[in-house]
Length: 298
Length: 338
Image (cartoon, rainbow over all chains, first blue to last red; front, side, top):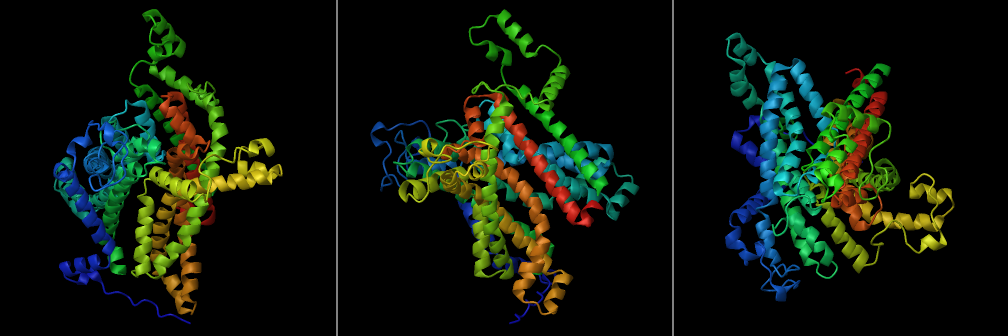
C-alpha cells in the first residue's frame, strides 16, 4: 500500500507573529510541560522557607529518636539517618545545585562570549590561537575535566563552580565565534567599518546582538546538563559538604542505608531528575521554536 | 585522502600535547605543598627541602614540564599513592573491563535508539513521537548514579532478576577460574573454553550496561529523529518516494542511510561521555574497571592516579574522534575535500 506523503505545511513566517507562536506551542506540548515544571522548581527555591515543613532540618539539626522513619503524614518523604525531614531537605536543595548551575553558566558566558566575539570578528592569528586552546579543553569529555579539577581543589561549592565553569566556557566561545564570523562578513558591518566606527563599538552594538540568540538557546539547554554535572560531583564527595542539603550529596549519604530505607535516596534523586528533565524540555522546545527551518517543517 | 589523514593526525597530536600540558597545570594547582605532603606531618624544614629536591619541585616550571612530558611519552605516568603501583599498569589492568562495559552499553543504546528514532520521525507530531521524545530527554536528564542504585535495589535485591554486583560469581573462582589473556573477560573466557564464566560475566554486565546506556540511548534517539526528519525533505528522498517505494523503505533504507554519518560522529562523542559516566556507577556495581579505580583514587586524594585516568580517558576520546573522522572521510569524499 502506498501511503499519502505528508502535505507540505504552510509557511509559518507568513502568519502573524502571535499565531505562529501559538501554533509552535500547540505542536510542542513538551515545551509547555517543561516551562511549567521549571517555573515550579524556581518557585520552590524562592519560597523554600514557607514550603518546608521543618526548615531547621535543612541545616545541621539532628533528631536521634526520629532516625530513618519511612514516609508518613508528618514526614511525607521520611527522615534520614540523623532524623532530618527529607522533604524539607529536598525543598531546600532547590537552592543549592540550581544556583550553582546559574553561577557556572554566568561565568562560562562571561569568559566565553568576549573571547568568541573577538576571535570571530578579528580572525587571523588571534582566532587561530583561541581555537587551538578551545580544542584542548574540548578534548576532554565535559564531566572528566571538571572531575579532575574538583578532585585537586578542596571540596566545596566554590571549587565546584570553578571546576565546571572552566570546562564549560570553550563551548560558548566556539558557538559565538561561528556566529560572529558570519555576521562580521555582512554588508552592514562592512558599512560600519567604512564609516570609521571603532571596532569595539561595532562589536558591542552590531556583532554581539546579532550573534547571541543561538547562545541563549544553548544556555537554556545546558542548564539541565550542568545540574547533572553538579549532582554527579557532589555524589562523588567533590562538592557540597554535609549539612548542605544538596541533592547529589543526599543520594551519596543515603546510599549506605538504601537497602533498608529506600526513601533517603529515591526522593533527592527524583528531584535531580525532574529538574534536569524540565529544563532540558524547555531548552529543547525553545531551540525548535527559534529554528526557522524547523518551524517551516512544521 | 592521504593529505587529509596526515593533517587530521597532526592536529590530534597537537591536541594531545595540549592535553598533557593541561593535566600538568592541574597537578600544579593542587593547594598546599606537595613536598610537605610527601615528607609527612612531622617533617623538619630540611626534610621538606630534601623532598622538594627529590621530587624535582625546586627546578623551574619549564624543566618540570619537560620531564613530565618525557615521562608520559615513555610510559612513566608516576606511581599511585594508594596502590603503590605504576599508574599506567593499574590503568592497563582496569581499562579492558570498562571498555567492555561501555561497548555493551553503546550496543544496547543503538538497539533502542535506531527503531525509536525512526518511529518518532515517521509519525512526527503524533502521540508516539511525543512519548519517544519525552523518553529520550528523560534518558539524557537521568542522574545515572541514582538510576544505578534504584535498578540495583529493584531488579537485583527485590526481584532477583540480575546479579547485584561484581564482574562474575565469586564461586566460579574455584571451579572455573578465568585465565586473563587480553584482559577482556568476554574474549578471554570463550578463548579458554570457559563457558560458565562467559555466561556469568554476561549476566553481571547487563545491569551496569543498562544504566550506562541511558544517556547514549536518549542522545542517539533525538539525533536520529532530527537527522531523518532533515533528510526526508531532501529532493533525492522525495524522488525515492515518487518512484513508489513504500514509506517504510523511504525512512528505513534511504533517509536512515544518510543519518548514519552524523550518528557515527555522535558515537565517538557518546563513547567518551559513557566512559566518564562509568566513574559514577562502577563503584556501585563493584565493577573492577577504570571508574572504580578513579573513585578510589579520588577518595584517597591520589593525584597521580586521578590525573593518569584523566589523561588516559582524554587520549581514548581524542583517538575515538580521530578514527571516526578518518573512517567518515574514507566513505564520504565531501568531508576530505572540504
